[in-house]
Image (cartoon, rainbow, N blue to C red; front, side, top):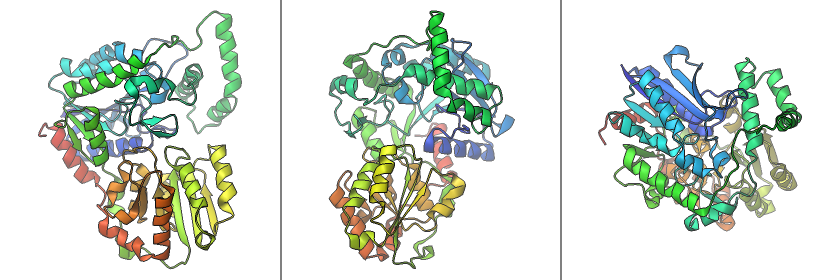
Length: 485
Protein backbone atom coordinates (compact mmCIF):
# COMPACT_ATOMS: atom_id res chain seq x y z
CA UNK A 1 0.00 0.00 0.00
CA UNK A 2 1.16 3.55 -0.72
CA UNK A 3 2.56 5.71 2.06
CA UNK A 4 2.05 9.44 2.60
CA UNK A 5 3.95 11.64 5.05
CA UNK A 6 2.29 14.80 6.37
CA UNK A 7 4.08 17.60 8.15
CA UNK A 8 2.90 20.42 10.41
CA UNK A 9 4.83 22.16 13.18
CA UNK A 10 2.43 20.93 15.86
CA UNK A 11 0.70 17.52 16.24
CA UNK A 12 -2.77 17.40 14.67
CA UNK A 13 -4.19 16.09 17.98
CA UNK A 14 -2.21 18.48 20.17
CA UNK A 15 -3.75 18.54 23.65
CA UNK A 16 -3.02 22.27 23.93
CA UNK A 17 -5.06 22.95 20.76
CA UNK A 18 -2.24 24.80 19.03
CA UNK A 19 -2.03 25.32 15.30
CA UNK A 20 -5.47 26.81 14.73
CA UNK A 21 -7.33 25.91 11.55
CA UNK A 22 -4.37 24.09 10.02
CA UNK A 23 -4.41 21.52 12.83
CA UNK A 24 -8.16 21.02 12.34
CA UNK A 25 -7.64 20.58 8.63
CA UNK A 26 -4.72 18.17 9.12
CA UNK A 27 -6.79 16.03 11.47
CA UNK A 28 -9.71 15.95 9.02
CA UNK A 29 -7.35 15.06 6.19
CA UNK A 30 -5.81 12.11 8.01
CA UNK A 31 -9.27 10.91 9.01
CA UNK A 32 -10.30 11.00 5.34
CA UNK A 33 -7.11 9.18 4.28
CA UNK A 34 -7.90 6.42 6.80
CA UNK A 35 -11.47 6.20 5.55
CA UNK A 36 -10.46 5.90 1.89
CA UNK A 37 -7.70 3.37 2.51
CA UNK A 38 -5.46 4.22 -0.46
CA UNK A 39 -2.56 5.47 1.67
CA UNK A 40 -1.00 4.58 5.00
CA UNK A 41 -0.72 7.98 6.75
CA UNK A 42 2.43 9.10 8.54
CA UNK A 43 2.78 12.42 10.34
CA UNK A 44 5.73 14.33 11.79
CA UNK A 45 6.02 17.64 13.67
CA UNK A 46 8.94 19.83 14.71
CA UNK A 47 9.86 22.94 16.66
CA UNK A 48 7.87 22.57 19.90
CA UNK A 49 9.37 19.44 21.50
CA UNK A 50 12.52 20.05 23.53
CA UNK A 51 14.34 18.08 26.21
CA UNK A 52 16.10 19.26 29.38
CA UNK A 53 18.46 16.29 29.22
CA UNK A 54 19.54 16.14 25.57
CA UNK A 55 20.50 18.95 23.21
CA UNK A 56 21.08 17.04 19.98
CA UNK A 57 18.05 16.70 17.67
CA UNK A 58 16.41 13.29 17.35
CA UNK A 59 13.19 11.80 16.05
CA UNK A 60 10.81 10.04 18.40
CA UNK A 61 7.73 7.94 17.67
CA UNK A 62 4.59 9.25 19.41
CA UNK A 63 1.08 8.13 20.22
CA UNK A 64 -1.99 9.61 18.54
CA UNK A 65 -5.78 9.46 18.60
CA UNK A 66 -5.83 7.00 15.68
CA UNK A 67 -3.38 4.64 17.41
CA UNK A 68 -1.49 2.36 15.01
CA UNK A 69 -3.65 3.27 12.04
CA UNK A 70 -1.58 6.45 11.72
CA UNK A 71 2.15 6.54 12.43
CA UNK A 72 3.17 9.74 14.20
CA UNK A 73 6.58 11.15 15.07
CA UNK A 74 8.14 14.32 16.43
CA UNK A 75 11.49 15.97 15.92
CA UNK A 76 12.87 16.76 19.37
CA UNK A 77 15.34 19.65 19.80
CA UNK A 78 14.90 21.07 16.32
CA UNK A 79 17.37 23.92 15.62
CA UNK A 80 14.36 25.86 14.30
CA UNK A 81 11.77 26.78 16.92
CA UNK A 82 8.04 26.98 16.24
CA UNK A 83 5.83 28.82 15.64
CA UNK A 84 7.57 30.99 13.07
CA UNK A 85 7.99 34.18 15.08
CA UNK A 86 10.10 32.27 17.65
CA UNK A 87 12.81 31.91 14.98
CA UNK A 88 12.21 35.28 13.32
CA UNK A 89 15.66 36.55 14.33
CA UNK A 90 17.49 33.34 13.45
CA UNK A 91 17.26 33.25 9.66
CA UNK A 92 20.93 32.24 9.36
CA UNK A 93 20.30 28.92 11.06
CA UNK A 94 17.26 28.41 8.84
CA UNK A 95 19.36 29.02 5.72
CA UNK A 96 22.41 26.96 6.69
CA UNK A 97 21.20 24.05 8.84
CA UNK A 98 21.75 20.57 7.37
CA UNK A 99 20.97 18.53 10.49
CA UNK A 100 17.24 18.33 9.80
CA UNK A 101 17.80 17.39 6.16
CA UNK A 102 20.16 14.54 7.06
CA UNK A 103 17.93 13.37 9.90
CA UNK A 104 14.86 13.26 7.65
CA UNK A 105 16.81 11.41 4.97
CA UNK A 106 17.57 8.66 7.51
CA UNK A 107 13.95 8.71 8.69
CA UNK A 108 12.57 8.32 5.17
CA UNK A 109 14.95 5.46 4.39
CA UNK A 110 13.80 3.70 7.55
CA UNK A 111 10.05 4.40 7.46
CA UNK A 112 9.47 4.94 3.72
CA UNK A 113 9.70 5.11 0.88
CA UNK A 114 6.88 7.65 0.72
CA UNK A 115 4.86 8.20 -2.42
CA UNK A 116 3.94 11.70 -1.23
CA UNK A 117 5.33 14.16 1.32
CA UNK A 118 2.77 16.88 1.98
CA UNK A 119 3.96 19.93 3.93
CA UNK A 120 1.01 21.71 5.50
CA UNK A 121 3.48 24.15 6.96
CA UNK A 122 7.23 24.71 7.00
CA UNK A 123 7.67 26.27 10.43
CA UNK A 124 10.02 24.21 12.58
CA UNK A 125 12.07 23.09 9.56
CA UNK A 126 15.05 24.56 7.69
CA UNK A 127 15.54 25.41 4.04
CA UNK A 128 17.62 22.36 3.11
CA UNK A 129 14.74 20.03 3.97
CA UNK A 130 13.29 20.90 0.56
CA UNK A 131 16.31 19.17 -0.96
CA UNK A 132 14.73 15.85 0.00
CA UNK A 133 13.53 15.86 -3.60
CA UNK A 134 17.15 15.33 -4.72
CA UNK A 135 17.48 12.23 -2.58
CA UNK A 136 13.99 10.89 -3.29
CA UNK A 137 13.08 12.05 -6.83
CA UNK A 138 10.17 9.61 -7.13
CA UNK A 139 8.42 11.13 -4.10
CA UNK A 140 5.83 13.81 -4.85
CA UNK A 141 6.50 16.97 -2.80
CA UNK A 142 3.34 18.99 -2.09
CA UNK A 143 3.32 22.28 -0.18
CA UNK A 144 0.07 23.90 1.03
CA UNK A 145 0.27 27.64 1.65
CA UNK A 146 -1.78 28.12 4.81
CA UNK A 147 0.42 31.12 5.63
CA UNK A 148 3.25 33.18 4.14
CA UNK A 149 6.19 31.61 5.97
CA UNK A 150 8.21 31.13 2.80
CA UNK A 151 8.20 34.90 2.25
CA UNK A 152 8.00 36.17 5.82
CA UNK A 153 9.60 34.45 8.83
CA UNK A 154 6.95 36.12 10.99
CA UNK A 155 4.42 34.16 8.90
CA UNK A 156 1.78 36.77 8.11
CA UNK A 157 3.41 39.67 6.21
CA UNK A 158 2.24 42.01 8.97
CA UNK A 159 4.65 44.89 9.65
CA UNK A 160 5.27 46.31 13.14
CA UNK A 161 1.86 45.13 14.37
CA UNK A 162 0.22 47.87 12.31
CA UNK A 163 0.13 47.33 8.53
CA UNK A 164 0.41 44.89 5.66
CA UNK A 165 3.99 44.38 4.53
CA UNK A 166 3.79 45.30 0.85
CA UNK A 167 7.47 46.21 0.62
CA UNK A 168 10.14 44.93 3.00
CA UNK A 169 12.82 47.13 1.40
CA UNK A 170 15.29 44.35 0.78
CA UNK A 171 14.97 43.03 4.32
CA UNK A 172 15.71 46.35 6.02
CA UNK A 173 12.18 46.64 7.46
CA UNK A 174 12.47 43.18 8.98
CA UNK A 175 15.15 44.39 11.40
CA UNK A 176 12.59 46.49 13.28
CA UNK A 177 9.45 44.54 12.46
CA UNK A 178 8.81 42.94 15.84
CA UNK A 179 7.29 45.31 18.40
CA UNK A 180 8.65 43.06 21.16
CA UNK A 181 11.73 40.85 21.10
CA UNK A 182 11.09 37.15 21.59
CA UNK A 183 12.72 35.82 24.76
CA UNK A 184 13.89 32.59 23.15
CA UNK A 185 15.49 31.36 26.37
CA UNK A 186 12.16 31.61 28.18
CA UNK A 187 10.14 30.10 25.31
CA UNK A 188 12.57 27.19 25.12
CA UNK A 189 12.19 26.60 28.86
CA UNK A 190 8.39 26.50 28.46
CA UNK A 191 8.68 23.99 25.63
CA UNK A 192 11.08 21.81 27.62
CA UNK A 193 8.88 21.90 30.71
CA UNK A 194 5.73 21.01 28.74
CA UNK A 195 7.45 18.18 26.85
CA UNK A 196 8.95 16.73 30.04
CA UNK A 197 5.63 16.81 31.90
CA UNK A 198 3.84 15.12 29.01
CA UNK A 199 6.51 12.45 28.82
CA UNK A 200 5.81 11.80 32.52
CA UNK A 201 2.10 11.38 31.74
CA UNK A 202 0.87 14.83 32.77
CA UNK A 203 -0.92 16.33 29.76
CA UNK A 204 -2.04 19.95 29.63
CA UNK A 205 -5.42 19.34 31.30
CA UNK A 206 -3.95 17.68 34.41
CA UNK A 207 -3.62 19.46 37.75
CA UNK A 208 0.16 18.88 37.84
CA UNK A 209 0.63 20.50 34.42
CA UNK A 210 -1.55 23.49 35.30
CA UNK A 211 0.17 23.93 38.66
CA UNK A 212 3.62 23.82 37.06
CA UNK A 213 2.69 26.51 34.57
CA UNK A 214 1.00 28.59 37.24
CA UNK A 215 4.41 28.72 38.95
CA UNK A 216 6.36 28.74 35.69
CA UNK A 217 8.17 32.05 36.20
CA UNK A 218 9.44 30.90 39.60
CA UNK A 219 10.58 27.57 38.12
CA UNK A 220 12.25 29.37 35.26
CA UNK A 221 14.25 31.63 37.54
CA UNK A 222 15.42 28.63 39.60
CA UNK A 223 16.51 26.83 36.44
CA UNK A 224 18.19 29.96 35.10
CA UNK A 225 20.22 30.59 38.26
CA UNK A 226 21.16 26.90 38.56
CA UNK A 227 22.52 26.80 35.00
CA UNK A 228 24.35 30.10 35.36
CA UNK A 229 25.95 28.91 38.59
CA UNK A 230 27.36 25.95 36.66
CA UNK A 231 28.54 28.25 33.84
CA UNK A 232 26.13 26.56 31.41
CA UNK A 233 24.00 28.17 28.73
CA UNK A 234 20.44 27.73 30.06
CA UNK A 235 18.90 27.98 26.63
CA UNK A 236 21.37 25.85 24.78
CA UNK A 237 21.11 28.26 21.87
CA UNK A 238 23.65 30.64 20.40
CA UNK A 239 23.73 34.42 20.51
CA UNK A 240 21.87 35.72 17.47
CA UNK A 241 23.32 38.00 14.84
CA UNK A 242 21.36 39.03 11.77
CA UNK A 243 21.18 41.62 9.02
CA UNK A 244 18.86 42.91 6.29
CA UNK A 245 20.76 40.70 3.86
CA UNK A 246 19.79 37.62 5.91
CA UNK A 247 16.09 38.42 5.47
CA UNK A 248 16.59 39.15 1.80
CA UNK A 249 18.32 35.80 1.36
CA UNK A 250 15.58 34.08 3.38
CA UNK A 251 12.92 35.16 0.89
CA UNK A 252 15.08 34.68 -2.20
CA UNK A 253 16.29 31.20 -1.29
CA UNK A 254 12.85 30.02 -0.21
CA UNK A 255 11.37 31.06 -3.53
CA UNK A 256 14.26 29.45 -5.42
CA UNK A 257 13.98 26.15 -3.51
CA UNK A 258 10.19 25.93 -3.68
CA UNK A 259 10.31 26.49 -7.43
CA UNK A 260 13.07 23.92 -7.84
CA UNK A 261 11.99 21.12 -5.51
CA UNK A 262 8.22 21.30 -4.91
CA UNK A 263 5.97 19.53 -7.39
CA UNK A 264 2.80 21.48 -6.57
CA UNK A 265 2.10 24.51 -4.37
CA UNK A 266 -1.50 24.55 -3.17
CA UNK A 267 -2.76 28.03 -2.33
CA UNK A 268 -5.79 27.88 -0.03
CA UNK A 269 -7.49 30.84 -1.76
CA UNK A 270 -7.25 32.86 -4.95
CA UNK A 271 -5.73 35.77 -3.05
CA UNK A 272 -2.98 33.55 -1.63
CA UNK A 273 -2.25 32.33 -5.15
CA UNK A 274 -1.93 35.90 -6.40
CA UNK A 275 0.44 36.85 -3.57
CA UNK A 276 2.56 33.71 -4.05
CA UNK A 277 3.00 34.35 -7.77
CA UNK A 278 3.70 38.04 -7.15
CA UNK A 279 6.43 37.01 -4.72
CA UNK A 280 8.09 34.90 -7.41
CA UNK A 281 6.68 31.38 -7.20
CA UNK A 282 6.23 29.77 -10.59
CA UNK A 283 2.67 30.20 -11.96
CA UNK A 284 3.01 26.71 -13.42
CA UNK A 285 3.38 25.25 -9.92
CA UNK A 286 0.80 27.28 -7.99
CA UNK A 287 -2.78 25.98 -7.86
CA UNK A 288 -5.81 27.21 -5.92
CA UNK A 289 -7.07 24.47 -3.62
CA UNK A 290 -9.69 25.42 -1.05
CA UNK A 291 -9.34 23.22 1.99
CA UNK A 292 -11.95 20.58 2.70
CA UNK A 293 -14.05 20.65 5.85
CA UNK A 294 -16.38 18.23 7.55
CA UNK A 295 -18.68 21.19 8.17
CA UNK A 296 -19.46 21.44 4.44
CA UNK A 297 -22.33 18.96 4.67
CA UNK A 298 -24.04 21.10 7.33
CA UNK A 299 -24.69 24.26 5.33
CA UNK A 300 -28.39 25.11 5.16
CA UNK A 301 -30.13 27.23 2.57
CA UNK A 302 -31.41 30.72 3.25
CA UNK A 303 -34.93 29.40 3.87
CA UNK A 304 -33.60 27.55 6.91
CA UNK A 305 -32.45 30.77 8.60
CA UNK A 306 -34.90 32.35 11.06
CA UNK A 307 -35.12 36.15 11.30
CA UNK A 308 -37.77 36.72 13.96
CA UNK A 309 -36.21 39.49 16.05
CA UNK A 310 -35.71 43.22 15.72
CA UNK A 311 -32.29 42.75 17.32
CA UNK A 312 -29.37 42.29 14.92
CA UNK A 313 -26.76 39.96 16.39
CA UNK A 314 -23.18 40.45 15.18
CA UNK A 315 -20.49 37.91 16.07
CA UNK A 316 -16.69 38.02 16.09
CA UNK A 317 -14.78 34.77 16.60
CA UNK A 318 -11.09 33.95 16.78
CA UNK A 319 -8.34 36.05 18.33
CA UNK A 320 -8.33 39.51 19.93
CA UNK A 321 -5.42 40.57 17.76
CA UNK A 322 -4.73 43.70 15.76
CA UNK A 323 -3.98 41.77 12.57
CA UNK A 324 -7.29 39.92 12.95
CA UNK A 325 -8.97 43.35 13.03
CA UNK A 326 -10.39 43.14 16.54
CA UNK A 327 -9.24 46.60 17.63
CA UNK A 328 -10.35 47.99 14.27
CA UNK A 329 -13.81 46.41 14.72
CA UNK A 330 -14.25 47.94 18.18
CA UNK A 331 -13.37 51.36 16.81
CA UNK A 332 -15.88 50.92 13.99
CA UNK A 333 -18.68 49.76 16.32
CA UNK A 334 -18.07 52.85 18.45
CA UNK A 335 -19.04 55.10 15.51
CA UNK A 336 -22.47 53.53 14.93
CA UNK A 337 -25.48 55.66 15.87
CA UNK A 338 -27.44 54.96 19.12
CA UNK A 339 -30.49 54.15 16.97
CA UNK A 340 -28.62 51.13 15.63
CA UNK A 341 -26.54 50.08 18.64
CA UNK A 342 -29.62 50.06 20.88
CA UNK A 343 -30.95 47.21 18.74
CA UNK A 344 -27.71 45.35 18.25
CA UNK A 345 -26.24 42.41 20.11
CA UNK A 346 -22.46 41.92 20.00
CA UNK A 347 -21.12 38.40 20.53
CA UNK A 348 -17.38 37.86 21.00
CA UNK A 349 -15.95 34.34 21.17
CA UNK A 350 -12.21 34.69 21.77
CA UNK A 351 -9.70 34.03 24.51
CA UNK A 352 -9.63 36.92 26.98
CA UNK A 353 -5.87 37.19 26.61
CA UNK A 354 -5.61 40.88 25.78
CA UNK A 355 -6.36 43.17 28.72
CA UNK A 356 -6.30 46.30 26.55
CA UNK A 357 -8.81 44.84 24.11
CA UNK A 358 -11.07 43.71 26.96
CA UNK A 359 -10.96 47.19 28.51
CA UNK A 360 -11.85 48.75 25.17
CA UNK A 361 -14.74 46.31 24.72
CA UNK A 362 -16.05 46.99 28.21
CA UNK A 363 -15.91 50.74 27.56
CA UNK A 364 -18.28 50.57 24.57
CA UNK A 365 -20.50 47.71 25.78
CA UNK A 366 -23.06 50.01 27.42
CA UNK A 367 -24.04 51.40 24.02
CA UNK A 368 -25.45 48.08 22.81
CA UNK A 369 -28.61 46.11 23.50
CA UNK A 370 -26.42 43.28 24.77
CA UNK A 371 -22.79 42.12 24.73
CA UNK A 372 -22.18 38.39 25.15
CA UNK A 373 -18.68 37.08 25.77
CA UNK A 374 -17.23 33.59 25.44
CA UNK A 375 -13.71 33.08 26.77
CA UNK A 376 -12.68 30.87 23.86
CA UNK A 377 -14.70 28.01 22.46
CA UNK A 378 -14.59 24.42 21.29
CA UNK A 379 -16.20 22.89 18.23
CA UNK A 380 -18.83 21.35 20.49
CA UNK A 381 -19.88 24.87 21.52
CA UNK A 382 -20.29 26.22 17.98
CA UNK A 383 -23.98 25.32 17.49
CA UNK A 384 -24.85 27.07 20.75
CA UNK A 385 -22.71 30.16 20.10
CA UNK A 386 -23.82 30.60 16.49
CA UNK A 387 -27.49 29.73 16.97
CA UNK A 388 -28.56 33.31 17.59
CA UNK A 389 -25.98 35.05 15.39
CA UNK A 390 -27.33 36.93 12.36
CA UNK A 391 -24.09 38.15 10.85
CA UNK A 392 -20.43 37.21 11.30
CA UNK A 393 -17.73 39.85 10.95
CA UNK A 394 -14.31 38.94 9.48
CA UNK A 395 -12.46 42.29 9.81
CA UNK A 396 -8.91 41.09 9.10
CA UNK A 397 -6.25 43.72 8.36
CA UNK A 398 -3.70 41.26 6.93
CA UNK A 399 -4.00 38.96 3.94
CA UNK A 400 -5.45 36.16 6.09
CA UNK A 401 -5.16 33.09 3.88
CA UNK A 402 -8.55 31.51 4.62
CA UNK A 403 -9.72 32.02 8.23
CA UNK A 404 -11.21 28.90 9.80
CA UNK A 405 -13.88 31.05 11.46
CA UNK A 406 -15.29 32.01 8.05
CA UNK A 407 -15.81 28.32 7.32
CA UNK A 408 -17.28 27.66 10.77
CA UNK A 409 -19.74 30.54 10.54
CA UNK A 410 -21.08 29.80 7.07
CA UNK A 411 -21.26 26.10 7.87
CA UNK A 412 -23.57 27.00 10.77
CA UNK A 413 -25.78 29.11 8.51
CA UNK A 414 -24.40 32.52 9.51
CA UNK A 415 -23.71 35.01 6.66
CA UNK A 416 -20.36 36.80 6.89
CA UNK A 417 -19.32 40.40 6.20
CA UNK A 418 -15.65 40.29 5.21
CA UNK A 419 -12.67 42.52 4.69
CA UNK A 420 -11.43 42.44 1.10
CA UNK A 421 -8.05 41.23 2.41
CA UNK A 422 -7.21 37.54 2.37
CA UNK A 423 -9.43 34.68 1.25
CA UNK A 424 -12.55 34.82 3.44
CA UNK A 425 -14.37 37.19 1.08
CA UNK A 426 -14.09 34.60 -1.70
CA UNK A 427 -16.74 32.48 -0.01
CA UNK A 428 -19.38 34.96 -1.21
CA UNK A 429 -19.17 36.95 -4.43
CA UNK A 430 -21.75 39.53 -3.31
CA UNK A 431 -20.07 42.95 -2.93
CA UNK A 432 -22.62 43.94 -0.30
CA UNK A 433 -20.86 41.53 2.06
CA UNK A 434 -17.37 42.85 1.40
CA UNK A 435 -15.73 46.04 2.70
CA UNK A 436 -12.37 47.68 2.16
CA UNK A 437 -9.93 46.34 4.74
CA UNK A 438 -9.16 48.95 7.39
CA UNK A 439 -11.92 51.34 6.29
CA UNK A 440 -14.25 52.21 9.17
CA UNK A 441 -16.67 54.19 6.93
CA UNK A 442 -17.02 51.30 4.49
CA UNK A 443 -17.56 48.72 7.26
CA UNK A 444 -20.15 50.81 9.12
CA UNK A 445 -21.96 51.60 5.89
CA UNK A 446 -22.29 47.88 5.11
CA UNK A 447 -23.49 47.14 8.68
CA UNK A 448 -26.09 49.92 8.49
CA UNK A 449 -27.26 48.68 5.09
CA UNK A 450 -27.86 45.21 6.51
CA UNK A 451 -29.41 46.57 9.72
CA UNK A 452 -32.10 48.46 7.77
CA UNK A 453 -32.62 45.70 5.20
CA UNK A 454 -32.58 42.30 6.90
CA UNK A 455 -33.56 40.50 3.69
CA UNK A 456 -29.92 40.93 2.64
CA UNK A 457 -29.05 38.23 5.16
CA UNK A 458 -31.00 35.75 3.08
CA UNK A 459 -29.67 37.13 -0.20
CA UNK A 460 -26.13 36.34 1.02
CA UNK A 461 -26.70 32.70 0.12
CA UNK A 462 -27.36 33.55 -3.52
CA UNK A 463 -23.73 34.61 -3.89
CA UNK A 464 -22.37 31.97 -1.53
CA UNK A 465 -19.84 29.74 -3.28
CA UNK A 466 -20.28 26.78 -0.96
CA UNK A 467 -17.72 24.97 1.14
CA UNK A 468 -15.39 22.24 -0.05
CA UNK A 469 -16.39 18.82 1.24
CA UNK A 470 -13.63 16.47 2.35
CA UNK A 471 -14.74 14.05 -0.37
CA UNK A 472 -14.32 16.58 -3.17
CA UNK A 473 -11.14 17.98 -1.65
CA UNK A 474 -9.59 14.52 -1.40
CA UNK A 475 -10.38 13.88 -5.06
CA UNK A 476 -8.57 17.12 -5.88
CA UNK A 477 -5.57 16.23 -3.72
CA UNK A 478 -5.30 12.82 -5.34
CA UNK A 479 -4.93 14.57 -8.68
CA UNK A 480 -1.79 16.29 -7.33
CA UNK A 481 -0.62 13.25 -5.38
CA UNK A 482 -0.68 11.18 -8.54
CA UNK A 483 1.19 13.78 -10.58
CA UNK A 484 -1.53 14.89 -12.99
CA UNK A 485 -1.20 18.65 -12.67
